[in-house]
Image (tube, rainbow, N blue to C red):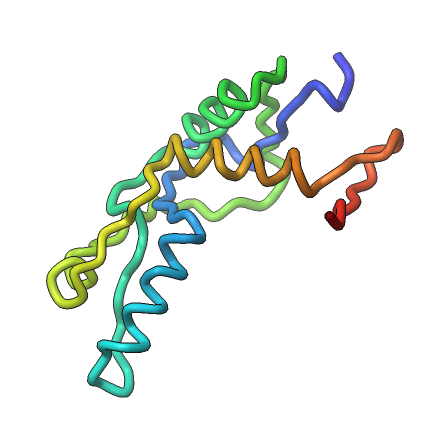
Length: 130
């Protein structure tokens, strides 16, 4: 099997992460710039739930339409903890909730890559400036 038909995951894929689509982050920045009263405040942003990396990669592959296998590389470094953030402060104090769910965010990201990122025959990445 060629390297290009594999999706390499560092570690075993069991680690869980909470994610956020970039437009939701930008929406929150806009809100906080106009409404924040304190000079410093810690506020967690995310979807408010985690997903194992293995399931995330499976979703990405399925939505990409590519025929890829997953190769777990336990020799590469990984961070062995699970992360799911409590977004209740952002919801209650700033009336913010993420608008883009995980599946929609994956599709938007795939579309962006198809539009702007190109690979040459050697696998080198180029940004397509349109």
